[in-house]
Amino acid sequence: MFYSLIPRRSRLLVLAALVPTLAFGAIKSTHKNYLEEAETALRENRPDDALASLDQVLKDEPDNAAAHFWRGRLRAGKGELDKALPDFNAAIRLQPTGDAYAHRGYVYQKQNLSDEALTDFNQALRLDGNNYLALFLRGLLLGEKGNTKAALGDLDAAITIQPDSREALQGRGQVHVIRKELDEALADFDRCIQLDPRDPAGHTGRGGVNYLKGDFKEAIEDYTQAVELLPKDGRPLAQRGYAYAANNQMDKALADFDAALALSPEDPAALMGRAELRRTNKQWKEALADYEKLLKAAPGDYQALLGAASALYAAGELEKAQGLYADLIQRYPTEAQPFNDFAWLLATGIKDSVRNGQRAVELADQACKLTDYKNPGYLDTLAAAFAEKGEFSKAIKWQEEAVKACEKEPEEIQADIKSRIELYKQNKPYREAQK
Image (cartoon, rainbow, N blue to C red; front, side, top):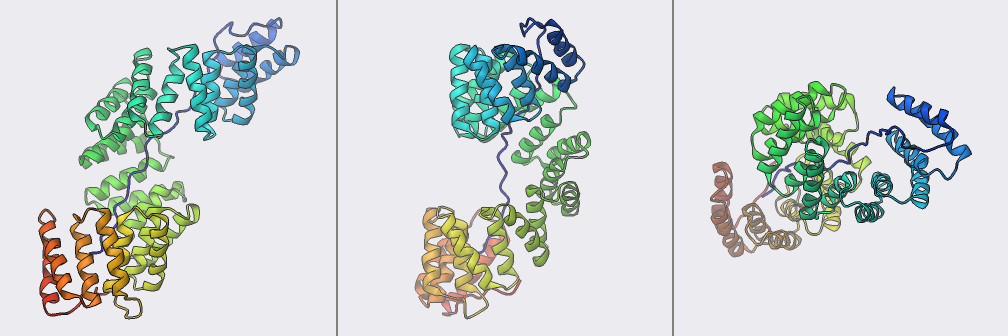
């Protein structure tokens, strides 16, 4: 059986932005006027003026460790990571502190240098075991690396230090989601919203948890709050689109994906959602256009490749679909679905020139092996492959196994699987009708 593609949720962890602040008297300098100017500029939210004053301090005092540290913080806060790194290097060389290592780790983490970041966070915590920033950022990094138990330990410690930190609560909620501890995640996002009802990250986080719990109406409500709070950001619209689709409100889902793409034409989540809806609506050409945009940005994307192959197959372009499936099983040899869908095409395709019973059996058997011969749809495909090969006794055997395995499937799927037993008893292979 050819199964439709179910979009996967993207990973939730996002590195929080730092808001640099300057403590009065933090920089000791003989040039008090520059220090005072920097402090005044920070107080009045004029970071560029503060940077200019720090430049003057360091021009005359190049070994002022605190000035390097704070200039690094300001540059990191402005997103000037390449400029911030030398300042943190200098601060660590001159006066190694937990804060300096934690902030340099932040820069490394933003630059996707995770090993270097982890080394700095570890050193920061050796120097200062209660360094909130190092605990928080190491928790996020460990969560992204899959060490969720250690990540929770760090984030718990960070929250103990700063109980009302929404960024740490959000991070811990995201780790709970990865661990499928949805009630705990919901409590963290609820707390974020209690602390600030206008926190869009709290609403999107809680919306994601409600989506995973199957509470789609509640998810829609949370995403709607985020849409209102972030009217120029397409991401909450795309997330609400998925919730609408899961709630069978397809027109509203499509409207959200369109609106998200109007704000950000290359947004992958919105493109994928719209592509899936278009494919469901048999709008093959339009669906393929969205998949192609996704694949242009990420040529090896599993979900986009599988969706594009599915749309090509359904549109009757079996040779092109065949090429994509061949690419998929090479790229993703541990994923069962591409093996199954490729086998279904070779076993039941409407074009005689593409069918290949022997190859279909090999591919379908691999899909079944990867799922311990428990997936009814894949067993159904294996039976169809044997029927195409002319081995009808084996086709009947595996079709009966598929019937046994599909008892918990919807009635229409059960009926579809059962219908092929009589066909095989008549020594007839199954042919997929044009969609």
